[in-house]
Image (cartoon, rainbow, N blue to C red; front, top):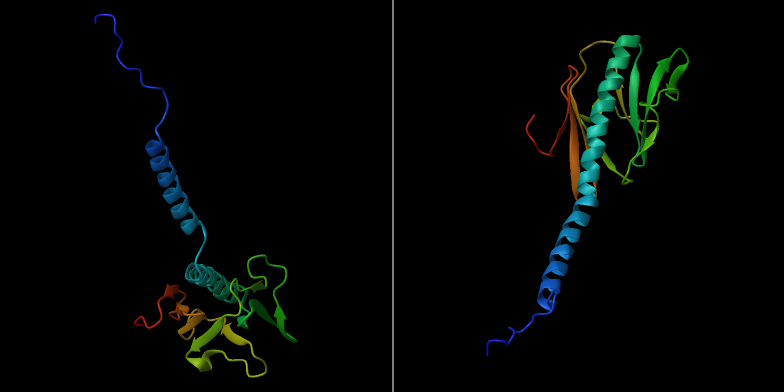
Length: 168
């Protein structure tokens, strides 16, 4: 039996090897799609982060330009206003302080302390930044569904994103 050849195995993959690869690809795609789709909580946190930067800018603008600047928000959108001789004028020429919709509108808004800026003439909430470098501290809470996040202003120009109920 010197001339007998060993049994020849066909080249290629077995069905089990192909199934294992398909399962690995499926799990990887599932994890990637979960990370690629932002949750409502992440959207709210991103909105709060954007607001901290815009509120900081509005406060700085009020001090530098020596004019009051206000942040005004409804459940659907928010905008910035500048105090002119004839009253409040919406900011339209500044791309950063332009009017914007909330991503997951409507958003419930809560300002603490409430006396810091409720505009009694409309459903809009308003926070006004004066020309002085020190303002009253406040916390603005954004809520959508079961999610909520706060923007805290310390009164001297620092704005931070906080979890609701986090100590002052």
